[in-house]
Image (cartoon, rainbow, N blue to C red; front, side, top):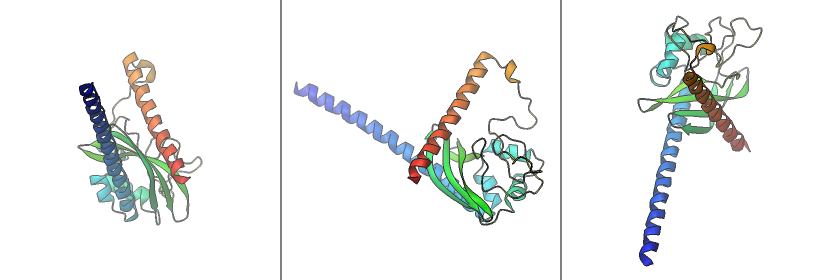
Amino acid sequence: MRRRIVTGLLALLAVAMIVLAIRSWTTDERDRARAAVERFGAAVAAKDYGTICQGLLSSQLKQGLEQVGLPCEQALREGLGAVRAPRLTVDSVVVVDDRASAAIHTGAAGQPASRDVIQLRKETGEWRISALGAPGRQSALSAPPTGTTATSATTPVPPGTPGGGAIVLPDPDAPVNGAVTTPPGRLTAAEKRRLKRRQARQRRLERRALREQANHGQ
């Protein structure tokens, strides 16, 4: 009987240690993702586009930015250079595997504050920003019209605004370098399932980040 109790206690202890290890890992990854977003905000405020391009953006995102025909740093300078006194505050971070969503508050001189979501993915062990702004959201870090924009569904150009002026960070899952996208009607069943799973995971991440942001503000 005593042996059974000891065995049971050891099993419970092992489970508790696993749970604590998982929580510790999640907390560490959240802190690392948060730090990456905070470094991005500081670099935008300092107009340090070299740091952003070289150490904070995902490789796929940089390729997407360069599709407008400008090097990464110049594309960011064109899109963000006119933003005055930008501010970014991280409210909450949600981590799922190698993806993360950070719910943030952004603001800039002459622009209303807004709530946004920054998407991150892990590359070579480091968190990199893969999208600025959830679909359908306009970040306060967008610049006034400059005539330079990229094409993306990530940060839309306001209707009726020629050029829009916002630096648009492309969809990280979009093809780059002129790759041809398979029309949805020609996707195989397996490809459609993968696409739906990816979209569902992205929506869950965004909802969780926004819920945590709302709870943080209460």
